[in-house]
Length: 142
Image (cartoon, rainbow, N blue to C red):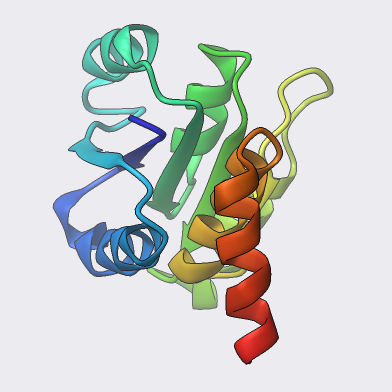
């Protein structure tokens, strides 16, 4: 598996589906799990530690602790997708962006699952010439 997608709640599934659709376009293997940093922290830690993914994507709203919690459990790249639940998603955006030094999370725009997938693909393409070509060809068409 290349990308492991985590949702804080099933209500975030529409964004995860955008991520998955974009990954599928590039034939990038992925998995989706629901695991909350607040409600099921032990499950989240277990899934992260057992995952063979090269990149993680955390999708969460409100306090958006999920991407930061994932990052605290791995040294692999983590991409955060803040979700618009309240305050136009600004609470989630700021929570995802403002992590302490040493626990980085790349953050995309509010509800922007497609950009999270594309960033994951860019990271994976660093070590995969075929994927890099697919990405370059895709951008050339737009």
